[in-house]
Amino acid sequence: MAKILLIEDEKRLAATIAYNLKREGHLTVVAKDGESGLQSARQEAPDLILLDLMLPKLSGLQICRVLRAESEVPILILTAKDSEADKVAGLELGADDYVTKPFSMRELVARVGALLRRSGTTTQSVVRAGDLRIDLGSREVFVGEASINLSRKEFELLAALARCKGRPVSRRALLDSVWNDVFVGDHTLEVHIRWLREKLETDPSQPRHLLTIRGFGYKLQDPANQ
Image: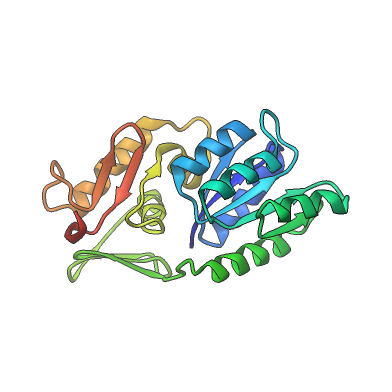
């Protein structure tokens, strides 16, 4: 259960990968070119990056070089090239693993899981934030001892924030992960956040769990850490 940045310009492949990662419980942010991918890597603070080598605007190797100067985030290279030199170049620049297209989704998910375990990313199924308890496995939510009834989308939105507890999640990442629909916009997200606050916060006008990160998105926060 991690935040994963996928930098891939093939729209159909990106959608398929994102769908399979979501099935594993991961929140996936998709960037469609090198420049936006590098920006997302800096803003989203992902737990792992899936990086295509052949990208418009900025190549995967260039991104890998820049990121390794800034971060130790695990990087899994996706490449259509069979050339040993391309794979070696990526690994020498600091990538942690690679898969060559075409690959099976089962193999990709397995490699993602292995990298996350190696990096120590948590896989806890119950997330706590003060008196709020979110069971990602049973899809149950409690405030204190009281069970809270959430709609499917409300729970998926809360779960996406819970998987990144304490870290800001962008509006785009939440829309991609929860709705995966180009026709759903910020207004829908804001309405669902409001509904969640009405159900989870003592004072929805002064939220202590679901915080707004102005100009970016939202964050699930333990009130004790504010």
